[in-house]
Image (cartoon, rainbow, N blue to C red; front, side, top):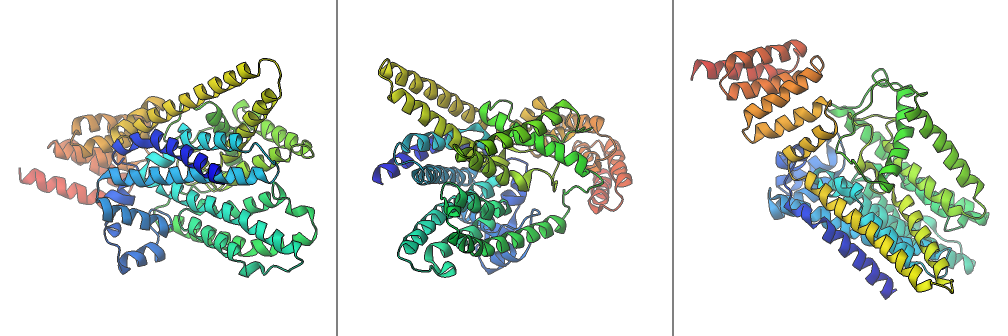
Length: 520
């Protein structure tokens, strides 16, 4: 046990070291204002703050523990981004530790030895993979690393609970399901995870997957009743969280898309494609960008959407047919799919078709499979009589090179999140026809006082999308007004008002420009 702890600690330390460059980053103009920079609520840890965090909706979410974590950071660091990034990096390190330990526990249920190498590989892939940069290096995504922390603790607690149930069964005692200490701890940790990010609603289904494999609880019929009874409170909490989340999304100017805007016939192909795009990004982590633009003119029969559907059916069929000898394939695949279900876009929120942050925990299944494959290759080499040392050295060099490449890519990806201008410049290069990327970079430039450069970006955004976003005109008008180009500013404010006459801020900005023009 001590050896296992030290290995998990060492891998967690490696993950933290790889992410240390994030401590040099600042805030970015993508939710960081709403979560930290301009959020007056987190500036005091008092009863009023707790009432706001627990009994209100903000940023179209209900995640009181996330707000508390930001409030604690503000109490310690103020608006120094160093401390806010430090908390996220430490949480990621803790999650990496838990991933290694959880993998060891799960593998020990089906393998009597040689679990250290697969667990170590799984932990390293989780800890240093560049696809996780968005979750760790973006302050607003604190909710990701925080919910994952409680989620992983909950899984570990559940495994321990199952062990105690088996021990009691062996003594022919009837376990008091709802009064078992480990069960209550698991339920509490699940509640904390939901209060950090509603994506945790998948945990009850994941527990059922673990019950099937590797815990093997379905083999005994007498377990079925207790398995069902155990999960009822979990599903009730998931249902409650889902309802609250929908209420939160509809409480503000939500980005939730209607079925008229994005019909099911569009959402399903995009969801299938995303499933395999995440796998591709995991295996070949190139061209990772902050905001993946939602596609236009989606057709089910287009090869880019039809092929993923065929692949999904093929992979699932393969996993089912190999169930007798390789249950772990179906278990890992189900974990991956189930973990992604809340964010596949069937209920579309925002303008993205996918997001790297969505797979922070979901890719744990594929990572475990890679760990098992590497462990299996090592065992095959270990049984060789000829060239054993040479083959072991070749495997070590090969995988070290891969991990080194991942670490290098991660540190490079962290630099993209340095500040708003750097972030959106990267997005503009990746998606040169995406108007929102230009607008967001312009907002960052405007905040720096670079009004001329900001006007250039706003103009580009307007040229790409001249009719649907009055904010583009209003934002450009503010820049013109700051440069005392009042004629141009008033034209932009008038256009914004014409496009959306019910938005009062446009009229306020126009009145301010008129007042400034009259008092030079």
